[in-house]
Image (cartoon, rainbow, N blue to C red; front, side):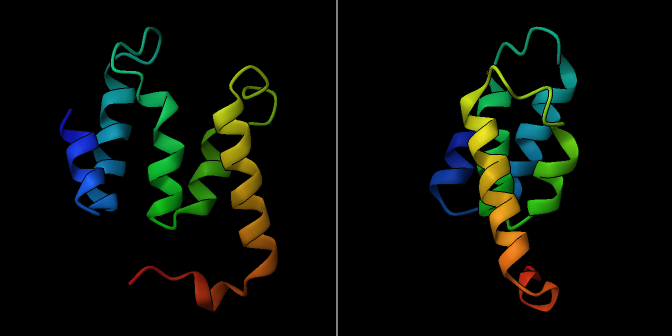
Length: 88
């Protein structure tokens, strides 16, 4: 719940950190469904490389939202020079 509240208030870094923490607590059963939102908050936080590193392509075949997040991250990383991707 606090992850969604932080995301609604444009605190994407906090929401991203909370979703990663929730996912690490019980990754096998994921009772809070953090896996379905962690890539969204990573992209909003402009942490595109994390999206690519955390979910291998073989792992995301059954989860369309993560596959779409990977595609967005790859597209942005391919188009933008690294100097424009800095958060801040």
